Picture: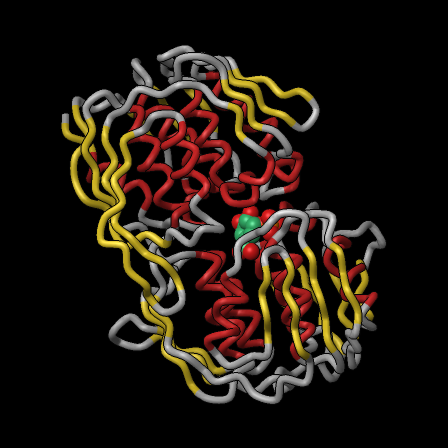
Length: 431
Ligand code: S3P
C-alpha cells in the first residue's frame, strides 16, 4: 500500500494502542509451561505474536482464540513441550526465537528454529553461548551465529553467575526460562536494567525467582507454575508514535489509553519530559503485576538534551522516534550507547538517519552515538519503506509533522506489531 500524507490542521482524539508485544509473547510462552489453562485478554494480534502462537502449537501447546477475543492457553507443565520435526518458523520476531531457545533448551529431542531474511541476519550467539555455558547444546546451522538454530535438548545445570555484557531483555529472559528447569541456582547480572516483564509474570505464577536491582536469581527445579489469566495493557512502543506526533504538531491534544508505563519501558516519557514536553499521566493503576496509565499529550516546545546510557534499554525501540522529536528542539541532542540499534529488525541506526534526513533533518552518527541538530521544522519527502515496522511508523510520523506533502510507498510492515496503525493515524487527523 502507498499513502500521501499532508500535515492536518489539528490532532485530536483518543487512541487505545494494541496490546503490549513483549507481554503478549511472554503470556503465551510462560503459560505454555504452566500447569493449568489461562485466558489472555487484550493480546496483541499481529504477525510477530502469530509466530509465537504457531511455534508453541508445533511444540504441542493448545492455544485457542475465544469468541470474546481472549486467547486460551493450555499449559503442558515445565517439562511438557514436545520436540518436532517441523521447523519452528519465528518469522520476523527476535523475541520469539530468542526466548524459545531458553524455553526449549531442555526439550526431549531436537528442534530447528528459523525465520525471515531479517531474522536470519540477526545475532543469536549472544543467547546460545550463555545457554551452552549452562549445559545446553544449541548451535547455528550455518556456523555464522545466526538462524537457522538447532536445539539438541539437554538437562541444564545452572549453579553459576552469568554477567551479561549487553543489557537485553531477550537474552535475560532466555536465561531465566532455561533456569526454571535446570538443577541449581542461576544468577544473572545485567549492565543496565532491561525490561522485566518475564520476572514479574513468573513471580505472579509462583516461580522461585528474586530480583534485586540489576540481578535476577532463578532457583531451578521449579516444579510447577500456576497458570494465570493476563490482561495485556497497551504497548508503550505503539503509543510512542502518537506521543511524538502530539508533542511535535503545533495544535494537538491526544489521549492515549491503557498504556503500560512499567519503569523499565517508560524511558520515552522521561526523555520528552526532560526536554520540556507536556505529558500528563492520568489514572495510574496496577493491572496484574504491571503499572498502567492514560497519557495526555499536548503540543510542546522542546529543548535539546544529552541522553544517558542507562536510559537506552528503557527506550530502545523508541530511539528513532526520540531522534525525530529532537529535530524540533531548540539546541542539539546527543544520544549515546546505541550500538544495539544496528542489530534490530533492520540497522535502525543508519535507517533513522537516512529516513529523517530525507525530510530535511540533520541527524548524524559518530561511533555509537546519534547527534541531532534542532531545526524546528522538516519538509516533505517521498520514500519507499522497507520491511522494518518501526521504521515505517517513523516515516509516517515524520510525514505527519512536516510542512509539505509526503508520499510513502510500501507501508504494510506495520502489521508486524500494529496492524491498525494507519486507521488510528487517520482517526487523529482533523483537517
Ligand atoms: C524485547 C526486548 C528488546 C526490544 C524488542 C523486544 C523483548 O530487545 O528491542 O523489541 O520483548 O524482550 P533486546 O532485549 O534485544 O534489547
